[in-house]
Length: 68
Image (cartoon, rainbow, N blue to C red; front, top):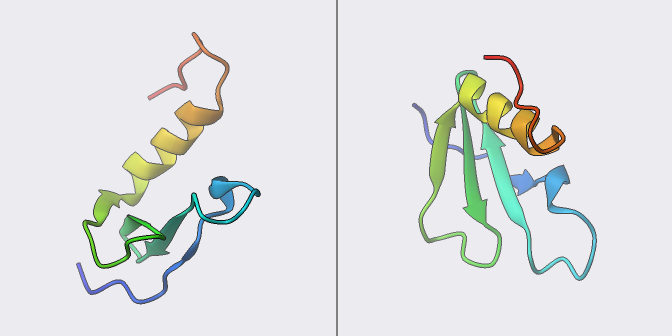
């Protein structure tokens, strides 16, 4: 995977004071996530399909997992 350079605050971070946010960067095949307060620290990188399933699961009512 190439170096992620298009970091932006995730729309899933919500409002508030802006200090409890994650940033995401995307490529054609992957999504990377990092803490906006410590961007030089660890970055988590996921295949796009895996990240999409994760977001879908987070928005589903509890007890109703999305189809695989």
